[in-house]
Image (tube, rainbow, N blue to C red; front, side, top):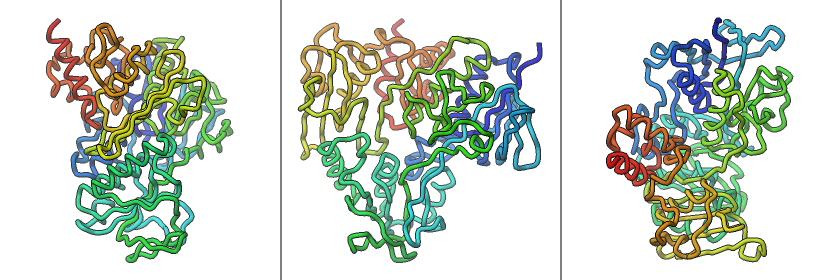
Length: 475
């Protein structure tokens, strides 16, 4: 039986992950003949780590997901620097911008999202206005951000703050301009945002909150809508993204803000799937890599036929701010207040120490949390949340990361974790993947990092990976 032709349109984090998942299930290429099409000329790379490239703590080659030999090693037909321009659903054929075509039995759209440029007078992409999204954007930012030069970052969300921290750490005078009353308003309540703002200010980042940009003059800076001025030689734009759906719209697929998919990640055409930032599923959150990688595993199960019952039911997303000197985790219901009669809500605030904790409990399970400067608590609470296990009776000990009673779920008990437990969220590395790498010869933390990329993101999982390594060594 000849293999099915599977085409992946998009070679970003979602597309590359899907290719890896397919290869893992079909290493000899007996079931799938794989073609991957990507607009960028780079090999696939981890966008989660781009702020580390800007900060100078990681080199561009260190964030690559594939090496140059990946296509020949896996027998995949990788076409870099080429974009899909149209889909002929009748003939099941994708047209590419180099004039070629590729036929498919199954097509996966992994086209991602595009940065949104706010309608500000004078704000146009150029050498001194860069939307922070790609590896090339990093190079442009570093070229324009001369040491000591003033930089304005538009957007106080996750990516904007990571860029601001990285540039401040390099010696730039950074001002974040954010139109909302506080930063990271999607993930943080007002008090935790206030504590985080204070911490970032201590690290050299200035803020203008509750005001928007009105006009940009190259070489001068930003005029804000309250009439004040922010000097800037460079503007880094991080004001959100919009799903890339042009292919899907022109092909007549159902699009409602994103490409609508079901639990099999199928679009309105059963032969076409969509994953990642371009897809719209009720259980997924945009802008995070974890849903995309979980979706990739489901689609790989389906297109290779290795698990026809596989379904995507949604992701319990956990957000981490990846910035040097800051440990922030937010998950689940972060906006629930103490006045909610259906939930237990504990809070702890230490602005002077730049620490904040919030724990939301429903039916004796973690429903949400914000943990700033409390890494031990973050590790344990994230595991409680992932596993859906009961919260120990001493809620305050859990919130503060203190030692728990014997038998309580603990971040330092790898033997109790299921194989599916995610140890490294930046790279979606599970305990099972670490065990597999260990058995393959990666028998210390450095080797595990090389084999799985665990610990190479924000670094917050280093102790957990070390715990797994010690546990394995003792077997």
